[in-house]
Image 1 (tube, helix red, strand yellow):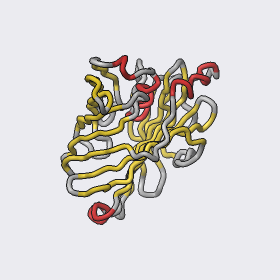
Image 2 (tube, one colour; image 1 turned 90 degrees about the vertical axis):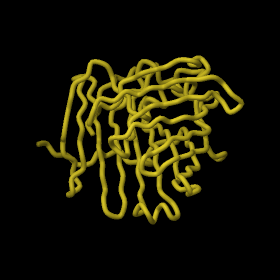
Image 3 (tube, helix red, strand yellow; image 1 turned 135 degrees about the horizontal axis):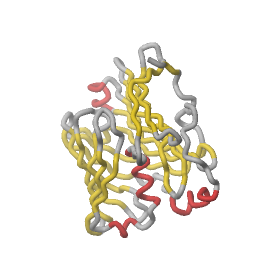
Image 4 (tube, rainbow, N blue to C red; image 1 turned 135 degrees about the vertical axis):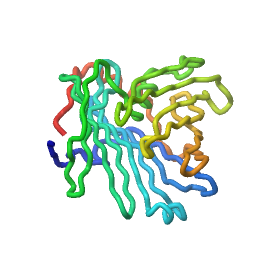
Length: 255
C-alpha cells in the first residue's frame, strides 16, 4: 500500500478573510470548548477553511486536553468552491488521528489517507465520482456564496457528502424568519465521532453566518453555540467574485 508524508499546507498560513468565534456550552459546562471558524486565502482562487475546537476547564481534564479540527483546501471555479484536500484531525494526551481526503477532478477520483504511528500517511481507500462531493466546510461556504439566504426560505436541499466510511447525505432545511434571523436545520454526519448523525438547529443572519446553534451529541448531551461579538465576517459573494475570471482549473494539486 502506498505511503506519503503529511501534506505541506499548514494551518495558519495565508491571508485571513474571515474569523468567526463561538462560545460553546456543553451540558453543565459553560464555555467548554474554544471554537472558531477561519477562512484564508492561500493564493488567487485558492482558499482554506478551518473549524477548530479546544476543550477548556474541567472538560479539558476529562477529555485529556482534547482538540480537533476540520479543514478544507478549496479552489474557486465556476462560481463554486470545490474541495481539493479535506482533513479531519484530533488529538489528546493519548492519541492523535488524521484523515485526509484528496480530490482529483481530472480523474474524477477521491482518495483517503490516514495517519500511521510513524507520522506518515497511508492510502486506505479510493473511489470515483460523477459529481463533486461536499465536505461540511465547502458546504457551509457555498451556501453563503449563493447570496441572500432569504431566497432559500422554505426549501430543502440535499447534497452528497464525504462517502467514507459510508455514503453521506447533507440535508439543509430552511424555515421562516424570526427576530433572531432565518431558522435552519442541518442534518449531517458527526465527523468527529463516527456512527452518529447530527441534527443541528440554529439561526443565520443576512450574511448566512450562524449566530446561535444547538444540537445533541450522544456522548455529551445538549451542545449550544453562540457567535461572539469579536468575530470578523466576510461578504463572500463580493469577496470571491473577482476570482471568477482567474480561470483556475479544478485539478487536485499534489499534496
